[in-house]
Image 1 (cartoon, rainbow, N blue to C red):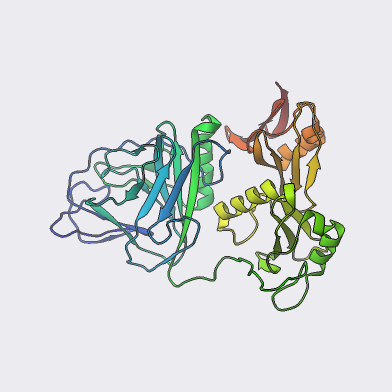
Image 2 (image 1 turned 90 degrees about the vertical axis):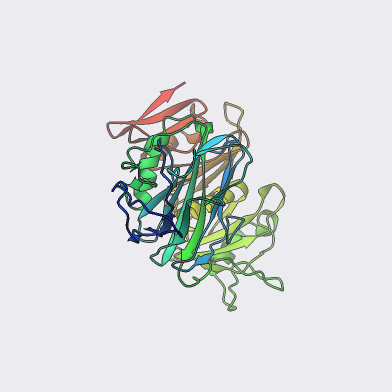
Length: 408
């Protein structure tokens, strides 16, 4: 970041009291600070850069070039930017920016705003009109990511960011998206699952980038596995035939398109199956189908992690066709998607949640959703620095590096 002097204003250098200066280059978003005395800010910390458990609480974040928050607009270094947010419930909101070089900015709360409390359904813009700071793009070129965390209660960020003296903006002591995610996950784990939520908006710094792989809609019917250059992905064609695609996938709505280190193709879906896609990792002889709620969550995880330019790393590519799970002893039925690095379980009652690693292996060793544990009721999460998961009939906790199973 760099702090730009406003007309007729004196600046305060972060961490150096009232010492005046011209320009201070930091990185990423530029915070141009005005002259007013900054009131002491109290931060409380909890947030995470991965998708939370599905809750009634929602938060949205966007930039002035993309009011939807779903695109990836481009800004030039030095260009002004404004950030908008809205929560559907009263919440305390924390705004981070992860720069292309891994530097992290926390620009809300700050000592120039009265509070980071946001009323339900009230749109806030940063900086607001008349604010004594501005946000400008400072670089470096590359992909930036805005993270908004909304919590029903104020959180303590002391292990992540600190104000020094009367500086206007906190200094973040960690670097890199993964380290931010780990730090925030530790802080939010004690919170009730329904009391916090996150959202992510992307923007690029520099020249316009190649758009994220969005398969193009053809003007005529296309075959399963057909690429835009007229060649065919044989594994996709075989999968469509194996799955009786006309009755389970529907007609292709896009060409087979490169995605990360493989290919994907979207289909219109059939009835209760919902929208569908065939996924084919390079080097694999088989392609697999993902549908409906599992496909939606899979793509949402990819968007939050990498802008949907490749599969989410916690799951990887599909490693088997999606399966319907019959009603279990709790009276719950649902769907199961198996991936290279994990699994997604989906029910109408609870939602769609991911499991991986030793927790998933232990769960499936007991019989998965058909066991006394039943379906997962939230995403796998960190508890005291170790992986844990909650289910209809109990939980799995990692103790001393070993998963332990607990009945309700």
